[in-house]
Length: 134
Image 1 (spheres, rainbow, N blue to C red):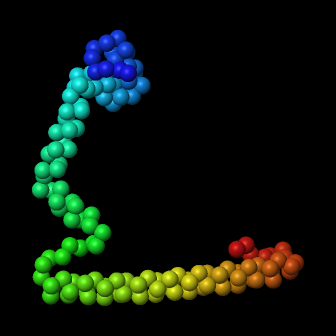
Image 2: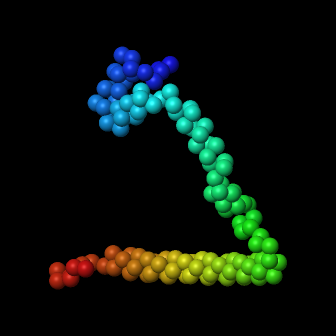
């Protein structure tokens, strides 16, 4: 295993990293200089996150219920009713969109069929010398 120190192997990897892709060389340099402190820094970062007030906010946002209860029963009931109503409206709009997409698809198919039938009808006719190009 490569240890974070100024050894021929780490210097060689750093130079090779700079030759291949400079951020790799920079990462190797950072590992050589501060690699022995990475474990402690990671532990400190985890401890700071556990004690952070933001952790509670992120935990509430990742709650599977979607929205946390506010403690006001009337407001929570109102919000649930409104969210349900909006979800029903969204479902209606999605159904209307699907119907419209089907309509457009059938319209395109009918137009393509008409153009194909016209092509097939004109294909068998002998062309005259003064036929106009399309």
